[in-house]
Image 1 (cartoon, rainbow, N blue to C red):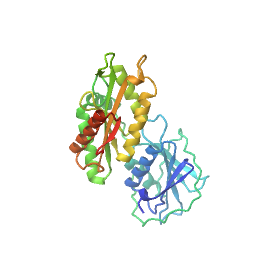
Image 2: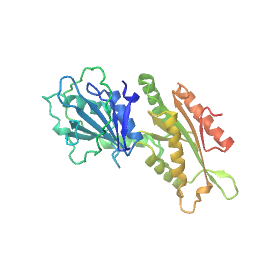
Image 3: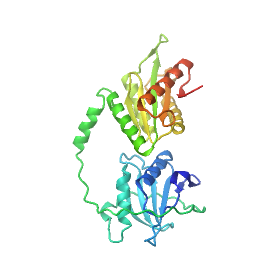
Image 4: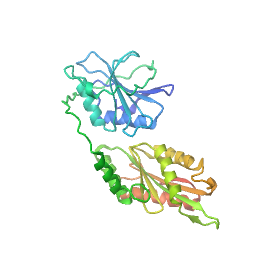
Length: 323
């Protein structure tokens, strides 16, 4: 049974995915990571037991508060409340986590160099519900891992400067197209959805006209958007004054609630001293692949049409197509 077809919850504290009969694949880990991003207060549990091991391993995934490195993955050597922790690691890379898991399942391997003892493991009560049937056995991957390469942060910072507009610090329109094509290629390869929110913010002037927000207002709005979205999501310029929020691994059913949350966080407190939130006008146009279409250019056009429809009908959030 695919993981996305069945998972169990326990009082909102954790979500237990279907038990596997082999080492989790990258797709399994990506699904668990997505669930952790959608449920930041929950611990996602992924258990498995191979035919060659007497141990049932449990991988727990949670969103690490304040971390820019990705969710926190913790591997347990057993399926009981007192099971030992083998390692704990923050990463956005499912392939790295899958390699660590696969190597750990080989008794001749030791992964002590990857154990992060400075971070506490997530704690959640074990669910008492019945477990789903095990899936057919798959071959496990065993990888001899080399020492990690030291990443040159100065190179990464220099690249960030090229991808972002200097005056706003947001990703440029050209970067938006690049990221969108990357997600579209991912959709074609694996079927993972991608959603797009086109976002327009205007300020009502003293004479009643709508004007573009000052730069400090845009900076504050961008910070609130970043705090509400996942690290995976990308805020970019589109056609001024329109901004684009690219949401990987997201359907329209997930993008619409996010647009509503963004509207709330942008209006609940003034974006600048003396700026009345009633004078801030927001519009969101939402579309997604494959829910709306299967072409990146059509995705942009559909989200833009939804945005314009919202302006014409005075609706803050519009999903394409809309009655």
